[in-house]
Image (cartoon, rainbow, N blue to C red; front, side, top):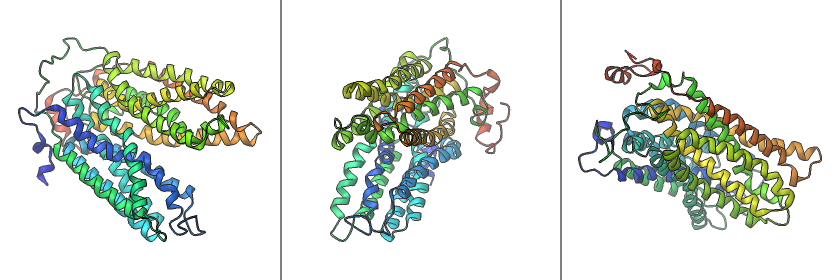
Amino acid sequence: MSILHRDHTIAKPGFSRWLVPPAALCIHLCIGQAYALSVFNLPMTKLIGITQSAPDDWKLTDLGWIFSIAIFVLGASAALFGRWVEEGGPRRAMFTAGLCWATGFFLSAAGAYTHNLWMIYLGYGVFGGIGLGLGYISPVSTLIKWFPDRPGMATGMAIMGFGGGAFIASPLSVWLMAKFSTPTHVGVAEAFLCLGAIYLAFMWVGAAIVRVPAPGWKPSGYTPPAVPKKLITRNDVYVYDAIKTPQFWLIWWVLCLNVTAGIGVLGQASAMSQEMFPGQITAVAAAGFVGLLSLFNMIGRFFWASTSDIIGRKNTYFCFFAIGTVLYCLVPWTGSIGSVALFVLCFVVIMSMYGGGFATVPAYLKDMFGTRYVGAIHGWLLTAWSMAGIFGPVLVNYIRQYQIDHGVPKAQAYNTTMFIMAGLLVIGFICNLMIKAVHERYHMKSDEAERSAAQVGAVGRPAGA
């Protein structure tokens, strides 16, 4: 379909660049549903029993793999298809992301209806995961090209949508299941079908709106600095050269450690708050605490990414690691003195920096490797998220259980974990400190090299680079 090709998305004179962030939000608000998948877990344990789980119903441990598969495939597909996204343009990638994301829901609906868990693994986990990966990276480089004066703010606006998508998806999913449920049927399958259709429509609207700037375009009144700032390059680095640099792997660990420290806590926030403050935080209050964390996760994506345009990407990550280390060390103390308010304050700030890390890193990559292949490089970097999605929950869950098995009260079972998280952030601080400008030998040497990069094989190096 030629209408999806990059050549058909070049903006005409007079096009407002402020239409591109809403196009990106159409994608990220939809795929942000992944953070609300847990609302389906309990209903899917009662597909046969209806009011309570029957012996043949699925267990929560089995259902937990749906999210894990989707996040793993997100990282893998972003890495594998990142260059395809860059070369074909955002419209083709957004269109394909919408198709895969919706297909994931349609297959999951069939799996719920026929009670076939493997179909849901394939649907939401694999097809949905591909939609997540393509949808997550597709607007990134486009936004950076439209906002060279404020790249952090631009990517923050879009990636904020991923953090906030659960606010829409959670109540909508609950309402749809209630709408289609009967005394003999749980409305999971119908809810999946409706969500798939809704998300497909909105993601294709985003694909229709998006445009790329014409070659040589610059914002009105914008003049690039005569002398580039330190750690901000004017040169481009080819994607497969970028992943050979020490800078890429240092940023990989910077993201991985920041996410590891946050994602494990995010997954256990409800249980942790109730166990650390027994009798003070009820189940309802804990649910409110989780919602508050999600809100600050979303706000932090815009706030910290915008702040990075002022203080720089490296300094922003220094803030994440320095402040985060102090806050994680404070958490056990808040439990010992019984201060719920201080406990909540620590974690809302931590969650803002967790979200901020996701939103700031595309601009960090742009500073280090240029704009030409930033989307593809970002795709490879998201494998750090896949690894952190394993490391974080394992650290929190298994260390907690080890502490309890050895007689530590539940209220204190998270103390060791918090200090370990603080230690991880110290390592992240050191990794960030070691990041320097990319050596010029990795820079693409000419326009000819850039053109030939589009024709080279997946593992080749562009001619003349």
